[in-house]
Length: 241
Image 1 (tube, rainbow, N blue to C red):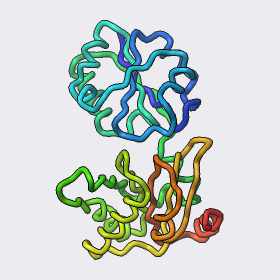
Image 2 (cartoon, rainbow, N blue to C red; image 1 turned 90 degrees about the vertical axis):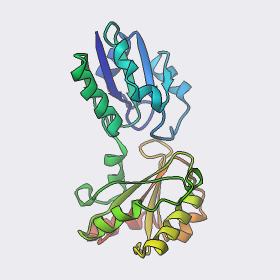
Image 3 (cartoon, rainbow, N blue to C red; image 1 turned 180 degrees about the horizontal axis):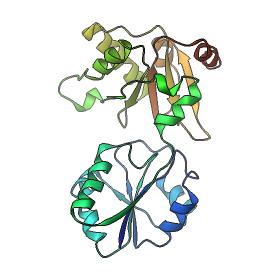
């Protein structure tokens, strides 16, 4: 029996042919649903794959009970984007090795590659930051600004993954307030990408205040650019409004 960790890619039709064939042989197919806002309803994924999908919360993944099932059944865990983008999924594989559970990994595209559509060069990105939703915290965490500062020190762009449920107006407000508190400067213009890798993808390049007032649907992420290559500059002009 085998545990399959499968990346779905960025839209409902992005799964690999080999991975789709494996799903047809599985006793159960789970979906990790806590690391990203899905840009489409899960029922559409079920229709596309023609299988029943069981959604799993964070606790149900981290308690590793899914591996117990994989000891006598074929079990698949679907992950939006690439299968190993989140640390939790690597921990699952380490646990599978310890428990002597056979496993296979199917990779796919993720936000870490799709952002190249902005025209920014992937090798010029530094550490990826996560922006929490301040409404869910008693304090107002600004640790994501440390990543921006570190990346700026080596002229590297910063990808900011925004928390589930965080809308563009609140995200930009948090960015601007954090910049003031930490005295870490953000550039005059930044980038927002909505529904990355799907047919509904939109890329915006403007000042934070301009982006704050735009209708930018969730899910989205932000990019804080640094020194731009002339090709990057030319590419970004296409998204300037």
